[in-house]
Image (cartoon, rainbow, N blue to C red; front, side):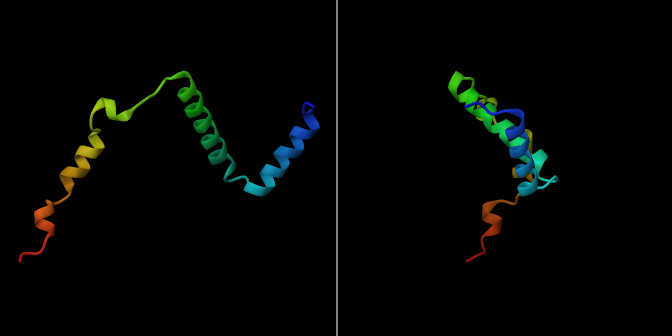
Amino acid sequence: MPFGPLEIGIVLLIVLVVFGPKRLPDLGRSLGSGMREFKDSITGNHKDEDDDGPSKLTAAAKADEPDEAAKRPAS
């Protein structure tokens, strides 16, 4: 039982009413990202960020944090 253009239009209209026009781009983006991750997991194409080493943002964030010893009160 394939879906015709009328059924697809009705489903899209219901999705528009439920989620609203402001959330539809985010919903589509997250759906596409999820489909891409699923496809990559099936085909074995993994993009591991840990293989590249620590990112520049992580290193910069750690440089801005004070030492753990400095956070502890003196006894």
